[in-house]
Figure 1 (tube, rainbow, N blue to C red):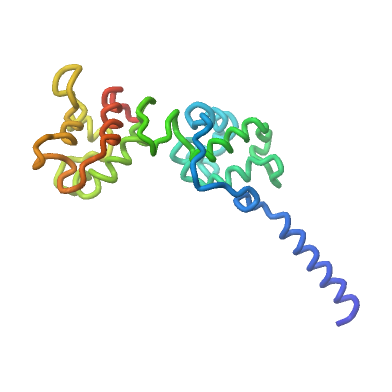
Figure 2 (cartoon, rainbow, N blue to C red):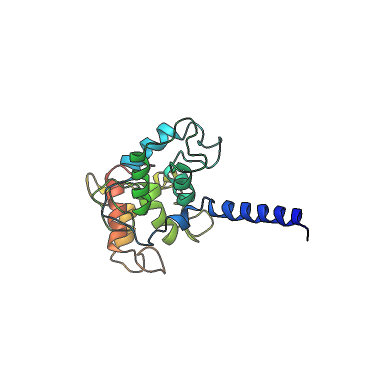
Length: 224
C-alpha cells in the first residue's frame, strides 16, 4: 500500500473515531434508574404541559410535525430519552429551533421523567385518590383490564363501556339515591351477591381501583 493510500486510510479512521464519540445517545450518556423518583412534585398537569404548550405544540400538534406532543397520552407514548436528547442545550440541534428551552425548564422535564411522568399530583400506580381522577389516566385502564376485554366491548355479553358516552348512555354513573350511595357502576363492583358481582368470573377489583372509580363518579364522571 503506497503512502497516499495510508494517509487516506488514516483520515477515514480518525473521522470515524471522532464521529463515533460525538453521537447523541442520551440513554447511554445519561443512564437512569428503573425506579420512580417520587421525591419531587413535578407533574404534567402542573409543570410540564405549560412548557410544552408554549414551546412545542405549535409544530408538534396532532396532524403537524411528529412526534405529536399536544396531549399527555401522546407525550408519554413517545420516547422520553429522545425528547430529553432533543431539548438538551448541548444537542446538535436543540429544540425548539427558534429558541431552545432554558435550563430550568429542561430540569423540570428531566425531573418529571425521573418521576415516571406523573399526570397530576399523584402517581397513578399508587392508591392516592386525593387528586382529581381522570377517565383516560385513572379509570379507563381499570375498565380495559377488567371489563371491556371480552364482555363490555360491543362484542361480549354486557353493554359497552369502551367510552364515557357508552357509560353515560347506560346510566352507569347514576346514584342509587340522590346525592348518596354508590353509583350503579360501583354497586356492580361491590354487590354482596357473588353471582352478580362484577367482573363476572374474574377476580374482584381491589379497594384502590374501586375508590378511584368512586371518586371519578362523584366528581362528575368527566370525559378527561
